[in-house]
Amino acid sequence: MTLLLALLGCSLVFMVQGFYSASDDVVELNPSNFNQEVLQSDSLWLIEFYAPWCGHCQSLTADWKKTATALKGIVKVGAVDADQHKSLGGQYSVRGFPTIKIFGANKNKPDDYQGGRSSQAIVDGALNALQTLVKDRMSGRSGGSDYSRQSGGGGGGGGSKKDVVELTDDNFDRLVLNSDEVWLVEFFAPWCGHCKSLEPEWAAAASAVKEQTKDKVHLGAVDATVHQGLASRYGIRGFPTIKIFKKGEEPEDYQGGRTRGDIIAGALDLFSDNAAPPELLEILNADVLKKTCDDYQLCVIAVLPHILDTGAAGRNGYLEVMMKMAEKYKKKMWGWLWTEAGAQMELEASLGIGGFGYPAMAAINARKMKFALLKGSFSETGIHEFLRDLSVGRGSTATVGGGALPIINSVEAWDGKDGELPVEDDYDLSDVDLDDNFGKDEL
Image 1 (cartoon, rainbow, N blue to C red):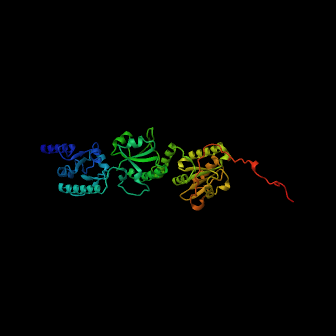
Image 2 (cartoon, rainbow, N blue to C red):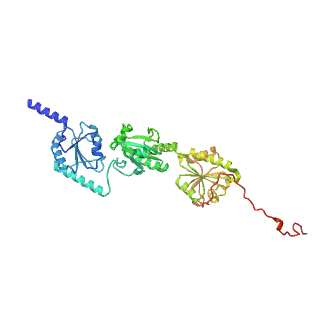
Image 3 (tube, helix red, strand yellow):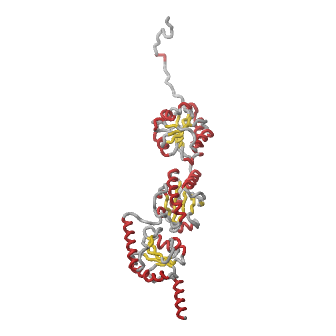
C-alpha cells in the first residue's frame, strides 16, 4: 500500500511537472515563448502536443527525447503541454494526444505528422520535411505569416492579395502612422475562422479601393499572433478587428459591414472626407483630354462662352459652379474639364453641343464611348440634377461622334483676364487714287 502511494505520488509530480526538463534537447513551449521560438523562426520545427495524463504520451516521451537529440542542430524539436496551455492546442486544432505537427515553410499552417511513433520513424519524417523545405526555398517558394497565406493561399475572390499590405512590427509606424493617407488595418489570427471568411472580401476590397482612390486609401493586415506588440498597443481582444488610421488622429474602430461592398463603401467615404476636390482642368491639348477621360469613369466637360461674351467675372462664375459640383461629387472620382466655345470645334461636334448654346456640359464614359448632355440650366441645381441622374443610371446617352475621342487643338491657357477685341490695322487713304467717277451712277 505504501509502495502504491509512493508510485502514485511520483506519478502526480510527474504529471504536474510535465515530461521534459531543461537538461533535455526537447524545447518546452508555452504561449509566452511560442511566437518567438517557433513562428518567428526560420527553422523547421517538430512539435508534440501532449497531456500529462495521457498514457500514449507517456510512452512516446523516451522516443521524443531521443529524436530531439538526434536532430539537434538540424531540426528543432519541441513539446506543448496542451492540457495546461489549452489556447495553443485550440489554435492548432489539437483534438487528441499525442498530436505531432510539423511547422515548416508556412508556420501558420503546420502539417500533421502521420508516420510511426518510433524515434527512427520520426527522424525520417522530419528529414523528409526538411528536404521539402529546402527544395521550396531553392525554387523561390517560401512561407511565413504573410496575409496571402492565412487561408492557405488560393485564388478567387475578385481581388489581388498583393494589394493588401502586410504590416509588421518593423514597418507599421513608417507605413501607417507616418503616412498622410488613410489606412484600414485588419488584425487577424491565421487560425480564426471569421478571419478566413473575411480574407477574400478584404483582398477584393483592397484592389477596388486602390483603383478608385488612386492609391490614396490603403488596406493592410497584421498577423496579431506574430506581431503581438502591435496587437497589444491597440488593445486587440478578438479577431478579426479592423481599425481606421488617419494622420494625427487616434485610431478608431471600423463599424461597417464585412462584405467587399461594405468595405469599399466605407473606404470611399473615408477618402471623400479627407480628399481634396478633383482639379478642374482647361483642355489645352489632346493629352489633357485623353488622360482625364482614360483615368476616370466619367469626365465632365463644360464648354463655356467666349471670353468676349462673359468677361473674366462671368467665366469665373461658371468655373465656381463647376468647382462646387466637383466638391459635391468628389466621392465619384470623376474628371472635370472645360474649354472655351470655338476652341475645340471637333469636340463640340462629336458631342452635338453646338445646337444647345453656351455654356454647355457633357459627361463622357471613354470606355464605352458614350456621352450624356446637360439639358437643364448651367447652375448648381441644374448640374446636380443632371449628375444625380447619371449616378443612378438615368438619363439618355448617345455614342460619341466617330466612336472615338476627337482631334484636339493645342491652345494657350486662359490668363484669367477679360478678353480684348483684336486690333485692326489703320489705313491711310490719302495716297489711294480714286476714280473721278467713283460714286457716280451711270445711266
